[in-house]
Length: 574
Image (cartoon, rainbow, N blue to C red):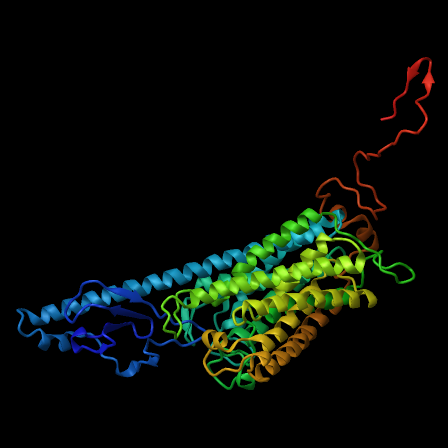
């Protein structure tokens, strides 16, 4: 509905027309009764912060705003012939225009969310390439198939159960209870619009958590175990955590609309350092611990033996694909882009925050990669591309929590510390004889935990108030007290406890049922041949005792002596 122009609510020389309550505000710069040039500014209602049209930094009262109706306009047009018809026509035109602008806003935001979902889903290809390059060639087909399985099995389980457990409100603070099988979608709950695009985006996040876990238990796990854990993780374990943090009903949510906030703040995990990365990392930790290390990973005296991945090229390719997808993961978590903020700067809005989030994401990853490069050079004496890639991904995992509420310079601090967190976790894993082929538990679990702590230390007041709500606590180092930091610590502890209590017993039961680990013979020969019908390509692993079928090529060096002469003929060694 539009406000009546003829009521002449003149504010700062501009006539304001409110369209559809809180959704859009059209500012008309012309004189009264002049319907000439018009500029439109939209205040779209985001799920994070209830947004109201603002004039001179004051909120308008929605309950008392005048509306456009023929009954109001008719007396003012009484001098004109057919005043009632004219009034009805004017209101109809403004309502139609309002609807067009509103629909366009929804379309823009929905397109933005869909594009972000596509980027996050493309990370599955990155996971597949990274995993393939990080394992030995004899297990390439196996690890690639598990990545496909994560997406396929995760899609069905998240459709039937996961989305409902995560966002099925109104519900309690622990678990959702609506939208099973996407029933009643699309709809709106607690000022959040649930459309099919929202489901697709959240599904892409869910399967990312499952992909993390598959890296920890690579090269020794039965295929049926992947199927069971992936469905359980994406359909139950992960959705519960995402409900706690991202649902309007969650007990730890910073966007909670019912009940008190945790420490008056709620935990800020904007894009999932805890919800996605810690969940996947802790689940992988328990899987690898219960399975035990790969054969040959530690020698008889307990010393670590490197079982290097077979392709640095695939590792680098996977890293760049994941980095690219992270721009849907972090900036896309705003869900909308056409929202304005309560500022006098018409050029500053959520679109600016989206750009800033992309910048903080980039800087954290770059810093972590460079820090790992030089640190490993000092520690081991050479430049290692795999270590650099893992360090870069650790920085990206860490910044994911606070990417929207920190300054770019703080992201550099985040990446620097994340690199050392990963190095330290790897040293500890080696001492404890813990074997994780992709360093997934250390990278996602360790760096994800640091990311939550980092947010509690460096979250900026302005950004917290813009993204969430005014009056909220912010980072300790930014003068905001310790409430946010305390909420972050609680979230870390609860995630570790929840995932341990659910995934640990699952892996233990699979082990007891002899469904978890392959036989020693299958592991030594490689699962590509024993479980998947053949090798991905011809290869030769340095530690392999079983040679693949085909031609074995051996380089023969000529001796220092001249070739022997037999009957005047030279025998050349090729």
